[in-house]
Amino acid sequence: GEPVLEVSKLCIDYGLPEDGGVRAVTDVTFTLRRGEVLGLAGESGSGKSTLAYAIPRLLRAPGVITGGDVIFHQRPVGGGPSQAVDMLTADAETLANIRWVDLSMVFQSAMHALNPVARIEGQLTDVLRRHRPGWSPAQRKERAVELLQMVGISADRLRAFPHELSGGMRQRVMIAMALALEPALVIMDEPTTALDVVTQREIIEELMELRERLGFAVIFITHDLSLLLELADTIAIMYAGRLVEMATATELVRAPRHPYSQGLLNSFPALHGAKKRMVGIPGAPPSLRAMPAGCKFHPRCVHAGESCLSVEPRLARPNGSFSARTVACTLQDGSRPTPAELALPDP
Ligand code: SF4
Ligand code: MG
Image 1 (cartoon, helix red, strand yellow):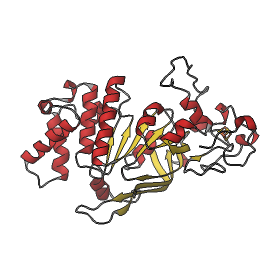
Image 2 (cartoon, helix red, strand yellow):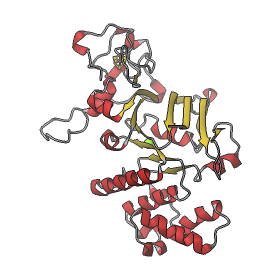
Image 3 (spheres, protein in one colour):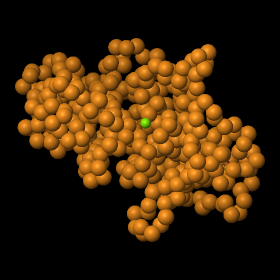
């Protein structure tokens, strides 16, 4: 399909170098196609949310984009070929016309994103009033009802205040708002993390049905890789602000190639066989202020060799691979002989 978002070599710092700034996201590159679901996984502090907020230019100080490109392919109202919008140089008006309309976000905590003193109806119709000025109040209300029903909430909840709804319902309202103007891309940052497992599952299923029906692309951010295996087309694994592996969900489950991806996949129990012991990854991600040299994962990597301490691997297709998968590990790129016991099957 046609690309909807192209991110290339994106770098994000916290603070400027002269103020002792640190790099939070380094050289992130990916392309998202229309209708595609990209899952972004990694431990907390890996830069996932920073990346998510930078794309629609919602990053707050001291976060600052210091390099790279973010191109959004906007479809003009009324049809015609899409136009490439450079998100990093776009003016406030252009950005305001893109957010909600073409690109929307669902945050982790709906309680913070919703206005606590406004009824659900007002919050939904607000978005419509701003971006569909020609609509009558009756049309807006009709659409608000339709949106609520779309996410499985009955129309009588329109009069409710956010605190009168359960956490799951509030998250559903956020999703309804995000979809109100039928955007081409929805960025979701841990949208179900605060919810119980059953509610989480219900919402994910609804979301996937809606995506099927409406065809929007999704960037779904979570620390829970098991969720992504079910809903994502492509999965990007992030570590210390870098993408370390990118593959289809199927490839990744079948044969994770980066030692960090292997560790993450081992960190939750298999679907069948409760006897399997969970093997977390020992150690913790590095602090932004004390990044190790070479491969940022080397202090935790059981396969680390001499060169890993000084050479930073680049995201590349593994040697001899025919798939689109990319991995940032010197064990994969042929720059270091692969010991037979570490030889991983090529999918
Ligand atoms: Fe481990 Fe070396 Fe690969 Fe980094 S480059 S993941 S330290 S084997
Ligand atoms: Mg986060």
